[in-house]
Image (cartoon, rainbow over all chains, first blue to last red; front, side, top):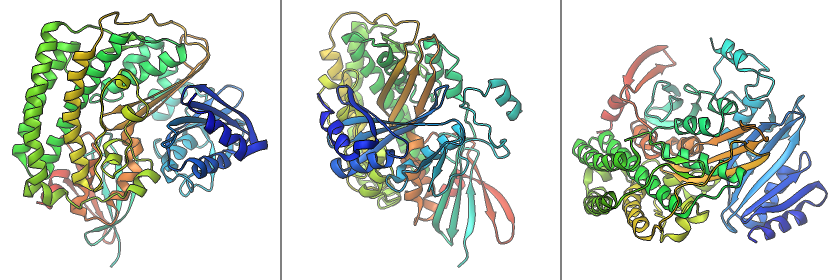
Length: 155
Length: 384
């Protein structure tokens, strides 16, 4: 099945930092890494398969904690990698990948302002979508933030 | 020479969304660009968390009017992925027809606008005249000119009869003939060449590094077309060739679209010939099971992707939408750097943002604090 060689390469490249690397569908690999190992995973993929495209960086509030998903596409083997890492809801912080993939700049800024994840080493972690004067610490895509509250802030 | 901040936007600086660009200019040369997005951020991702599969479909389609088929298709495929539903074969071909007609109308619209911005009004009028033919066919096919509500989770909403199939085939032939004529204009006309060749350069290396998508990437020699590298709907069974140009300038990005209209017309004809008979839709569940769905399609402007989290309820837990214009912003900033102020409209139009007729921009001279406004057309006028 398309994707096995990618899962294999990540197992070799990451070893202890890897929680899961499995081919969930033909051409789609789900990878779960320990905190801080997502950079190593991106580096390993770039070194082994060359050009890499970021489809999106998805931040999701899963109730108990936050989950980051880096949807990556490898042009060489034509495989979609869902690279996942979990973060606590209190003070979530993670290393940037913008030095490895400059195209991720805006995606990281979006996750930062929508969910409050700080990307260490990002060249310009400023607001992207939300208006100036938006209250500090109010992250619209967090589950505890209700629509009524957002409406109040926008009024 | 000292730098001046030139603020373009936020009210439609010739862009899809109202966006603001702050250009640092030295004389006539742009040295740096800082984008500020979000002026029409509507909170659709949050709103989708409170909507069922069917309600969400209508909202997703309204993310973008021009490429609405791409949005409803991508949303449907992501939901089908998480729910484990497979649409019938005939529906897949019908989806491709709607998708490609949508691409033709979107590309003709952009090429016309490009003609207008470079001061070639005749080209604009001719291209938009021919676009009407596609819009009329689209109305007969889906029931509406623009927001078609054609795709549903599990399939499509209506079928194609023989008389419409014949008319579609005829229209695609005549459109291809006309398009070959326009292709010659884009290839040879001195007005087009003077304003587009060598303007807004984006190297192949930068296009990949900045994750550019669609015609923007393909105009810089990156062979990246979702229809080829990750086929969806019926593309696997169709004979399809991605259009790639190596030059990396505004001209190359426009030429990609000219050739893609020809390619799209061929795809529609192929679908009409190869389409099997059968059901139009599979039954979709009302509950979205726990799990994840992902879909990516080649929208007219590049790859568009949806990522859905289900939680075993009527509403999804999270829907993430990544639109192609958003992905192309870093590449756009790269194109503008080092170019002339007068080339800003040409570079903007080459990534295919949407235009509104009230485009206005404010020019601020930081040295004196003097502030005045002008329209994008006046700015374009300086370039003629």
